[in-house]
Amino acid sequence: MHELPKLEYSYDALEPFIDAKTMEIHHTKHHQAYVDKLNAALEAHSDLQSKTIEDLLKEINEVPEDIRQQVINHGGGHFNHAFFWNTLSKEGSKEPVDRIKEEIDNAFGSFDKFKEEFTKQASTLFGSGWTWLAADETGTNFHIHNHSRQENPLLHGHIPVIGLDVWEHAYYLKYQNRRPEYIEAFWNVVDWDRVNEHFKSLTK
Ligand code: MN
Image (cartoon, rainbow, N blue to C red; front, side, top):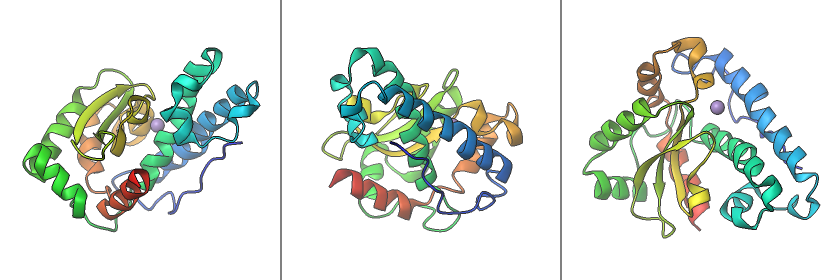
């Protein structure tokens, strides 16, 4: 059974950029619902219950068709939110480090140019979805890609580096319709040390 992961920080830890009420509802209601619905979908296929969420998504074509879309929706929702929480904090480096820095510079020219492009993509994503910085299967060739709903790079054989939730539930309480302000605030809570550690764990 999949479980809602505990946050490594308190709900108010990202204030004022992401408010405590949004964090609490996002984690205890939205993320929890994805976990519950994923578990419900897997009930009919107990052989899949021992697989990690990463493996379920990476090997999505091995998931039986009758639950494949549910695993994409709710398994994707579970993975994406767990991933998102893990890359955020107000501590840590506010600029890319180590290999992530090199790859971003290679792909975009500079961190500023990368931020500009990522911000543009996140601002223009239509409807609900996520903006991702991802690497290809070799861990290089960084690129930005918008995915609708809860789809993510793992489903396409790629490795996520950072992801930004641009569903309205991620920002509406504090920012209402002002998505660009939420995106701007996001850059203050990306912890590039955590991003680096997380990326290393996904690429080893
Ligand atoms: Mn969300």
